Length: 239
Image (cartoon, rainbow, N blue to C red; front, side, top):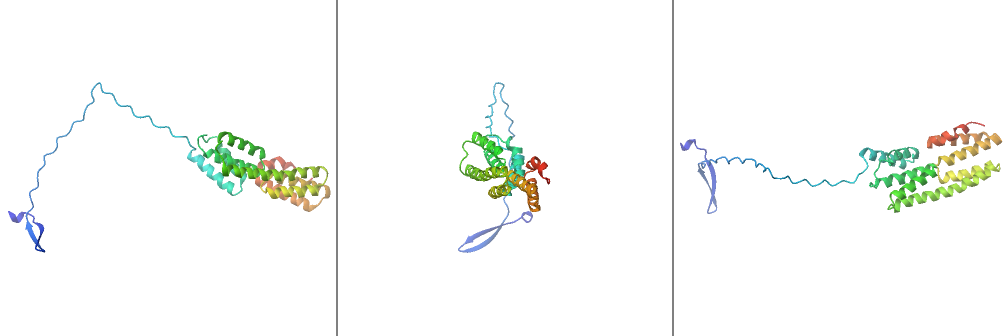
């Protein structure tokens, strides 16, 4: 009977030597299964404890809106202001006022609008920014203030150019408009005025160079701001 039992190897340390002892395994203990516990039934009068109300999360912009904003940011960084404006305007009204991402959208929208020459639209965006997010400070505001100063300085040149053009001095007007465009090269309105000044000079002198430059400026306006181009398209032909 012992031959049928499987042997166990036990190592015993004796005086620094190890001895192998073969023993038969101890019989396994047979455990009785634990009695199954019955589910406790609630008494008739017992009341359930109401669950704690879920805390309301602050509403934020949706994932799709955030994707549009990121696209607008990329376009703004690439100086593609017309397309950036369209992205920001698409989501501006859908962002909850509690989400500070709205201040990012409005400030970048104002930057794009002013860079393109839409100063009235930019002023409106700035007004909304101040009213909705009065806590916005530092970088965003400083950037916009600096851009408005640049626009103001460039506008002084366009004001002088308009007076010169009215007096028949197309050459002097062109020089002033060129200064304005140098300050704000993506301003489609300034480029429209420069194109019209070149056109006026061509009408007066029939200078082919003047018309070529007028055509170049009209083409740039079309690239920068299709809406502005629509406003001057009728004049984008030889007089």
